[in-house]
Length: 407
Image 1 (cartoon, helix red, strand yellow):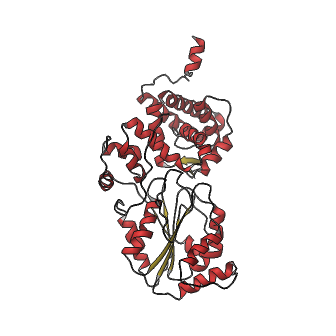
Image 2 (cartoon, rainbow, N blue to C red):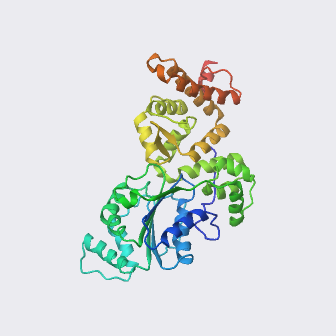
Image 3 (tube, rainbow, N blue to C red):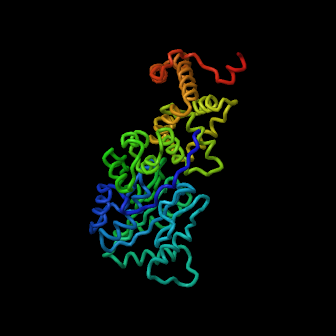
C-alpha cells in the first residue's frame, strides 16, 4: 500500500460550489407552493457525490439568499472522518455536525431548534410540551417556511431516526409550511409517516468532465493528472476531484482515492474492513461463500468468518443488498479495482483466478444445474479480464513465499 500524505478536503465554500442547479430549483419550487401536497425530499447517492455540500449550500446560501422567509436547521448525523470537516471549524447557528464517536440525543435536537426560535418554555417541560410549543410557533407563522435538513441520515443511528419520526417529524409534517430534506447512502430507512413515505426522491448524479473542469477552476487548482484521468479514477464524484488534482501521479491518486473512501470508518477497524473491500472488489456481487473465499485468498490466511465479513461491510453503508447479493457502491468498486491492478497486480491476479475457479466449480455442480448459464457467464468474465492482462494459464498460482520455499 502506497503511503500518502495530503491536505484534508476543503470545507464548504459557496464560491467553490459547482452546479446542482436542477436539484436546488426543484426544492425551491416545492417551498414556494402555497399548499404543497408533498413536504419531504429524500436525496440519495454514494459516498463522495456531494450530499453534505448540497445540504450546506441549501442551508447557508440558498435559503438565505434565494428565497425569503425560510428558517432552516441542518443536522449531519454521521461523521465523514476525523480529517474532514465539511462544515468548517467555525460553528454556525442552527447546525449540528456529529464527529466520530458522538451521538445526538433527542433532547439536544429539540434544544437546538427551540433556542433558534423566539419562544419561551414553561418550567421543566416534558417531551410532548416541547414538541407542541415548536408546532404552535410554526403553525402561527403561515407565511414562513421551516426546513429541517437531516444529512447522512441512513448512515446514522437508526434508533435516533425512529425517535425523531415518532416524536417530532410525524407531528410537524402535518403543517403545510414545515418541510424535511433527508440525505443518505446505502439501505434506506423504512419510514412509517406517510409524508416521508410519499417524499420526492432523487439521486445526485456524477459530474461530467466539463463540470470537473469547472470545479477545478473554482478551487483554483491545476493538476498533474488530466481531467479525463481525474474523471476515470473518481468517476465524476466531486469529493475526489480536489485531492486527485493534488496527486503527483496516477499511483498516488489511486491511493488517495482509496484512503478517502474509508475515512468514514473508525480508525481502529479501517485497515481490516478495507482489506475486505479490496478482496471482494473484483466481483460484481457476492454472498457469504464468496466473502470467505476472496478474503482468504487475498490475505493468504486461514478460514474466514464469512458472516462477520458481510456484517462489517454492510455496516459501512458502502455496499447494498440487491438481487439476492451484496453489491459495492459504484465509486468504491471502480477505485479499488484500479488501485489493486496498479499497486498489487499479483494480488489482483490471485483474486481473479480464485473467482474463476469458484464459478467454474459452481457451473459444473449438478445440484446447481439451473444456474449454470449464470455461473458460466461469470467465469467467462474473469477469464476475459485475466486474458486482457496477459494471463492465459488459468491454473491457480502460488504466492511468492511458496515459490521460494519449493525452489
